[in-house]
Length: 97
Image 1 (spheres, rainbow, N blue to C red):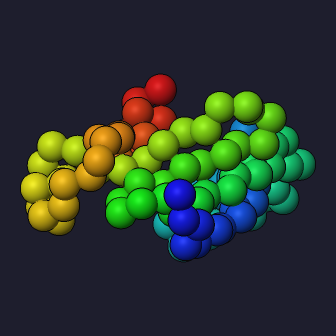
Image 2: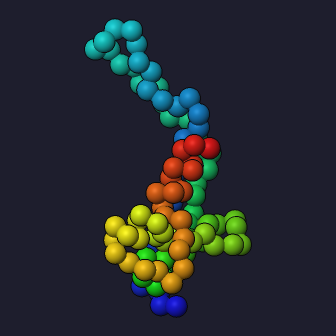
């Protein structure tokens, strides 16, 4: 397994309800301060072979694999050794959750 690319990502999620408040007057916007940071995601992504990437999330012992399958592999004209869910699949699932 060759490590071609390693990316460390830190993403901050602000507390709920820390948003911009829109007033009834169309041109007047009042800003509120953001809430405290409630979580920072620490993820290491390693490109393995071809389109396959392994993500290690701090706090979890098992990796998550990303890759291609179905119409995505057909679109990119690749045939991976093993099919994995694409990043798009995870984004859609996270949005639906």
